[in-house]
Length: 284
Image 1 (cartoon, rainbow, N blue to C red):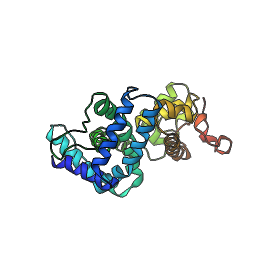
Image 2 (tube, rainbow, N blue to C red; image 1 turned 90 degrees about the vertical axis):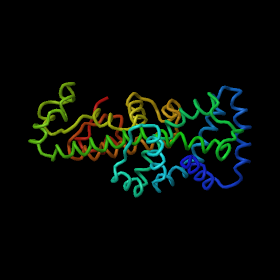
Image 3 (cartoon, rainbow, N blue to C red; image 1 turned 30 degrees about the vertical axis):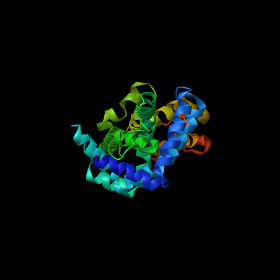
Image 4 (tube, helix red, strand yellow; image 1 turned 180 degrees about the vertical axis):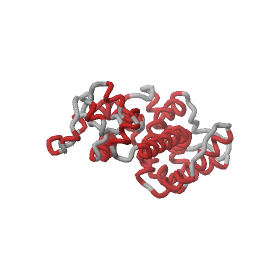
């Protein structure tokens, strides 16, 4: 119960104003959205507004370590295995980029579970009388984000560990690459590379992509397939800015590796293909 109250307190502190008034406003909005089955343009507008409203609250909770502590407590109460490395605690407190990387995926997952649980199944009750009483929709949504944090963090931490292992295996030399064929073998087998080219590569484009968050994978694959940013944003139900951010971050990862002549980059992901060095070349 204390953790639930802590979530409500964080939302109240972040939104200010009268909580009862927010609940009345939310109840009226839900009644309107229910007429269209919580679908369509009106619901997308509502969903985007809700995400923007809670984003600074989530960011602050993650920076303070409060979001992670609540997630750990909820999982322990339900017997779910969950552990956060102390180094990751420190990174999430000190790095805004790391916080935002995790929060984008947390919010994307929470949008789906929030609609299903709170609205379609009627899990949110503006007349709830237990505990501290009813909560606003923002509080319910933040709670869903905390539940999704376990899955997102686990994937994020696993991917960071894989990168560390790959970098430990490869020291940039041809001998190291040849000694670890698994790091580049699938490109060679697919016919993308000749034997001499493969000798200077440590990993596969697909291997790197598969280590990224699921939404980033979808954005990149749709880009390669020829979809434009607006189409990708609509298909994935995210903002155009989120699409651009994910492509920019993924390009940075790829170019860092390409500068070391370790990967092959598909031509569609080049921002200025003509100006890039020859080892950044790719194929459709």
